[in-house]
Length: 430
Ligand code: DOR
Ligand code: ZN
Image 1 (cartoon, rainbow, N blue to C red):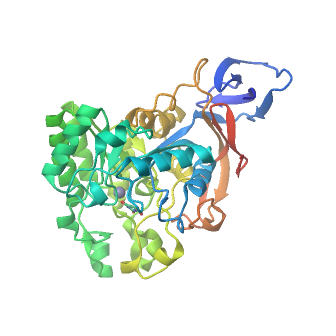
Image 2: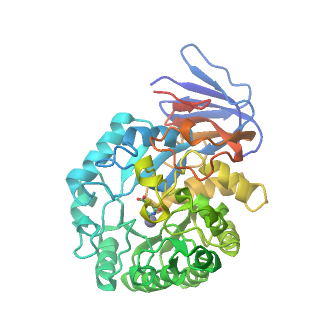
Image 3: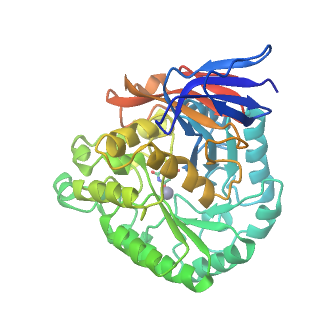
């Protein structure tokens, strides 16, 4: 592996330094460092250097949904978005509920080689919520599964959830719950409130999330297990999480960029690009999400990157699949919603988009400090750049971005995975 000299980079937005990388590891940090022969260089131009971003929640659609995304196209989007590791959800076809499927996903990620792809195993066979999948076999397989989830569906049965948490505790893995009591939502996909009523859309009440979060915190406490709550969307869930954390429950939580920025006010045109599960909620909810993330009650930002080919998305509201692209816009949305209003500084961004996700996902060589002896795994960010989002120009196979035409701050200038540049100036480096 060639060595790399990164010049004029500002780690966490601080003083500019040079970093010399040898064999994928930071060997020296200083000023006025020079490259000897054969050393590649990256002029960071005074931009902000962060540890590579880690996403606990993406849908890469492979196997079975290749018309919407593949591990290859999703890896491109991830590298361009500043990500160096992603967790791929198991709602594929076949479902990732066996060692064979999770090993395939991991291997395909390694072949593409742009980002570490960690398969998430299903909690129940076929995501049916009826019978536990073989968690131990998947954990011990070559895929080394460390996170299990039925995402897209809730593990609704409390007895199954209790058993899953007991296994998780024994195996030292985390259960990531899509908190939605299906009995309360009945498949509805608009936030239950004034806007859904006016539009004549069936409502998904916030209580369907909050009650499952409360129940699961109690079950996790009893099992001594690690619980991760996916895509928190309701302000009421925050109070539940805060109380559980205060009691020492091993619970972590994520919020998506869209639940930090977008509200159900967007639903008035019935455009399915705004259909997502859990649904966009009110301004009071987005404000609560921002504050909880700043405070640490919500630990991380995860994209829930959910590509859908146009035949699934460009239809009427009821028929459209829920989900939004996220990998290439997440950092910009976090800058807009959290950094610009002064809720997070660059250390805070590193915490919620890299360090904490790596801890929750149990990744030893991601989310590390920018320091000598640590992996050279970075996202280089131009904080002053502005860009206009165009779905057609994103690397994903699908184009279902809710930010179409929006001007967003901050651009990923380069991504580095263990000393290798994976993206630079908006292009993937193969
Ligand atoms: O909006 C969503 N899309 N929410 C989910 O839980 C699943 C995801 C998907 O797979 O498309
Ligand atoms: Zn989900």
